[in-house]
Length: 351
Image (cartoon, rainbow, N blue to C red; front, top):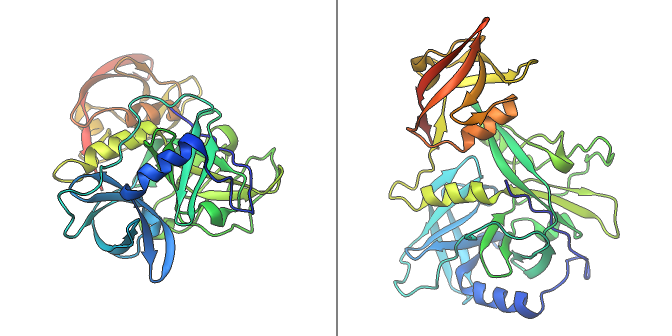
């Protein structure tokens, strides 16, 4: 799991402008990024990820199924929704009449980004720089069945308005995340010991789901992923944001680039809680699920999935995130005073 913690010194309240290699990278990226428009307002950025005219951005920027974007050349294009992924909160949009000889698409890093590497946050107003630190976190979604998603934490010493809707890139120009469009949160709890962070509230009612950010500096965070908040410590207000981690983005991009544009996840079909003795205690088995077909019952304690040892519901959730739909594995469960090995074929779910 990869966690980004980015910190930016403030210049005129907007962050430090780019220099050297970072500026050269940003100039190279300009043809493949577009400003997302909401009426006459600039609300965020979109990234071209495929030569056929496919763009991605955070779903909080989208109202309806179409949106206008402005390219660096000044040309305005209409994008139409063709795919979305609730885990990463990214939407896939296709441009109408995209030229065959258009700009080169943007990709993801081929390997984990080294700690303390520079980041580039691209905004409608330009670009500012950031830097990795370290850490680990994840989000918890509740869209029917719970899903754990690896996340990255990003921190900016800049006002929240300055980074809303931004795209995050490595210094070599690889896409590393997309932030939500948010407004300042007046009710943020500034107690560092409680580590509570209220995240942006725009998508929970729409999607009927919740996402909580946990781990590291967000142990008690709730609501929806890729959210942002401000804290009153440091040389300037610190904006904390969450964006899908690299392993999350890779799965999403792989699905978006298929003909169906769907991102598929393996599902077992159970609801679990921590078991005192270690493992994930099954409290519910969904009808017709892979778990029911395999013979998993309420009261079973899941101890392992394939070679992965399960010590808690969190380890269960993170292990399930990394499984492939249709994969066949052996799940070890404790039932009563005995242990059973059950053959399971994972189901598949997508938006």
